[in-house]
Structure formats: C-alpha cells, structure tokens
Image 1 (cartoon, rainbow, N blue to C red):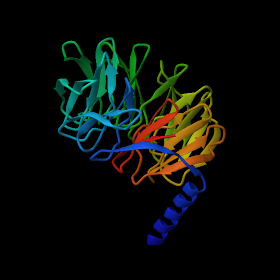
Image 2 (cartoon, rainbow, N blue to C red; image 1 turned 60 degrees about the vertical axis):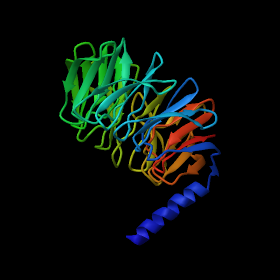
Image 3 (cartoon, rainbow, N blue to C red; image 1 turned 90 degrees about the vertical axis):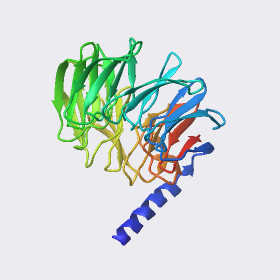
Image 4 (tube, helix red, strand yellow; image 1 turned 135 degrees about the horizontal axis):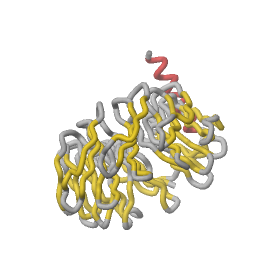
Length: 338
C-alpha cells in the first residue's frame, strides 16, 4: 500500500513539474478549508469557509474588508441581488447581509444544512436543503411560498429556464419543477446521487451523477438525448462553450465532448480526481483536483500548460475575471493567480 501511495505521489509530482507554474498575485488565509464557490461584486471577492465565516476580500490586494460569523461551516456560494448577498450555512440558516459591510439584514431557519447556492428570480429565492426539500422564499416578506420534497439531500444549485426549475437530488433523481407552484413537471432517474448542478444549452440539460455517467436530457420532456460513461463519480458542474461540453470525473479525466452527440473530442488524465468545475477562457481551461493542483490546460487538446500546487484538495468552484483566477483550497487559503 505504501509503495502504491509513493508511486501515485511521484506521478502527480512529475505531471506538475513538467509544466510551468501559475503566478500567485496574493493569497488570503482563512481559518478553515474553502469549498464554497467564489463570487465577485463591486470589487469584493466573497466566499465561505469551514471556520464558519463568510469573507469579503479586496479583489486586487487580497485584504480582508469584513467577515461575518455563522454557527456552522459555509459551503454554499453567495448570490447578490440589489446590494444584498444571500447564502446558506450548515447551521441551518439562510442569511441576508449587506454586501458592502456585512451587516446582517435577516436570517431564516430551515430544517437542515444548506449547501446549495441560492438562485433569485422575480423576488423569489430558490434554494436546496439537506432536509430533502427545494424551497421557494418570497424575499420581501421572507415567506416560504412552497417547498418540493425529494427523497434525499438537495445540494445541487437549481437553474431556471422557461419557468421551470431544474436540479438534482441525492436520491438519484433529476427534477423539473414549476417555479411558480412547486409542482413536479418530470423527473429522470440515475443510478446514484446527484451532487452537481446542471447547465442548459439549446433546450438540453447537461449534468453528471455519482453513477459515473454524464447525461444530456431534453428539458421539456425529461427524455435522455445521450449519455457518456466514465469510470467513477461525477460530482462537479459542467460547462458548455459553443459546440463543446466540458466536465471532470473522479476517474482523473477532464472530458471534452460534442454537445449534440456526446462523442468524445479529447480527454486529459490528471492523475487525480477532478474536483472543480472547469473554467473556460479564450484558449484555455482551468480545473482543480483532489491532489491540490490547479491546472491550466489547452482548450484545443487538453494538454497541460501551467499548474500550481496547494497543500489541500481543491473543491471550490473558481472564478475567472480580468485575466485572473480566484479559487479556494482545503489548505485554508484563497488564491489569486495568473
């Protein structure tokens, strides 16, 4: 067993050392692992940490502007609407804070931890919860308009298209729900839990499941268009750019498929589980791994261009803006790199 671990470490080190390094602009140390998605608003970077704090950091300098403490780890991303930021915590509360200074506006208690990122449309906030429900909250009154019950946790962040909410559940089903009344439109069964959040392009939904299969589903019928099988869990979100869909798997591969047919264009083996959603730039792709390495790959063929090693697994969904990548690591640091 020790020999296998040693060989694996050598492989990861060899891959990372064969590419040039990404340059660190700054890094900010929080008090816990950072798994939440990264967001930006008015020059401030927002993220949650396992140390129970929600942080606001200056985009250019990495200086802390403010932080707000909850009573549990924060893995939910933040959503900003009209200067108010909304996020969930493992303390079972949904929070609303002033985005500029972190002042609490209100909080609303649920019956489970909240790891889903809120989505807001027409003053209604939609969010999944580990009490197995998807909720619709009317923001002016904080009234729960409806809730939709699934068979297990809802950590997937919903998307809205044609007045329907689309999301997955740990019960293995992918759901389409009317966003006005919470009535089920259709559901599609996979073989294992769904942690990833869907994307939609030209009426087709794309998402992965822990059954190792990446699915393309018709958004109006719930019928499978195609599927692509990998060799391990798919826990992160995909992204569609033009005619290509990109996603990672725990089988260590980043995949590029033709979005119409699911035909493989290329795959890139990074010798460790792909644990972040890919971020696409004009010519390149950023993606993080369980080995703690952030890679910059060629969009054309998936070949490694640059990399940066951290001291912890990278689960945080990165943000790319102004030619700069921001991401968190289990080593407790938030990174700004080029």
